[in-house]
Length: 284
Ligand code: NDP
Image (cartoon, rainbow, N blue to C red; front, side):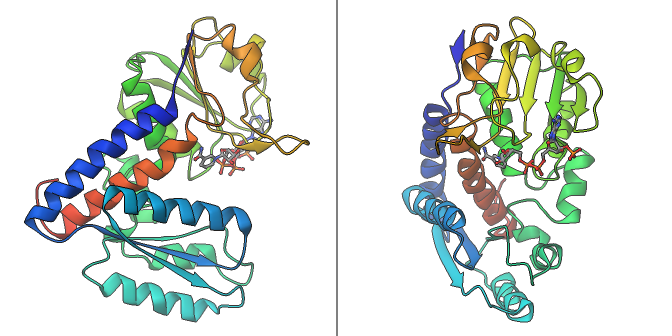
C-alpha cells in the first residue's frame, strides 16, 4: 500500500512552476494574480495568505485586496472591473464564501473568463464539459496530477466520484471521463452507495463528512482519493475516508492533511501561468 504524498508532489510541481516563471521573466512580464477577500472569516484569511505566500515563492506577482464585511456589491464589482482592465493582473479570484448580502454568482461572473483562474464562470465550466478547457478547476486538477504522478491507471477503469458540487465533484467526473475512465457520480440521493464504491478502481470522495468511507466500502487494490476537509469534535482535521481501515484495503491512498489539500493552490499557480501566456500570446 502506498500513501500518496501530496506535499512532496506539490513541492515538485511548484519547483517546475518556479522555473517556468523565471523563464517567462526573461522574455516579458511576470504573471500576476489578484485575490479579493471580503470580511473577516478566519479560515478564508488563512487560505488567502497561503495563496499570496505561494505566489511569492514561485515568483508570481500577487495582490491581496482585503475589503470590509459591509462592502457593497457594486463596489466589489467596480474593483473587479478595474482588475479586469489591468494588464499586469492575469488572474483574479474572489475568496468564497462572500457575506450574505453579496450575490456570489454575480461576482464570480464579473471576472473576465480569460482571468477566471478558479474556472468558475459558465464559459470556463462549459469548456471543461466539452473537453476543451481553458483552465482546469484547481481541486480536481490537483487530483488528476496526483493520479498521473502516482502511476494510477484511469483508462477503462471504474472511477466512482462521490459528490456533485460545481467546484469538485462535477468537474472531477468530466476530467476522469476525458481520460477514458468509466465514471459514476454518486450523491446524497444515491441508493446503495456501497455497491458503487465497492466497484471502484479509483474512488474519489468529496462529500464533507468525517470518516464516512470505511474499509469495507472499498474494493481491494483500489486507489482512494480523499478530497474532504473536515474537523473532528476535538478540532483535528480529517478527511471523508476512515484512513486506518481504508489503508488496509487500498493499493494507494491520499492522507488528510497532506494529500489533495496542498495541490489546490499549486494548480491555481499553474492556471495563473496559463492565463499570463494566453494574455501575452506566448506558447501555452
Ligand atoms: P458540497 O457540500 O458542495 O458537496 C458535497 C457533495 O456530497 C454533494 O454533492 C452531496 O450530495 C454529497 N453528499 C453529501 N452527503 C452524502 C452522502 N451521505 N452520500 C453521498 N453523497 C453525499 O462540498 P464541496 O464539493 O465543496 O466539498 C466537498 C469536501 O471537499 C468538503 O469536505 C470540502 O471541505 C472539501 N474540499 C477540499 C478542497 C481541497 O483543497 N482539498 C477544496 C474544495 C473542497 P447532494 O448534491 O445530493 O447534496
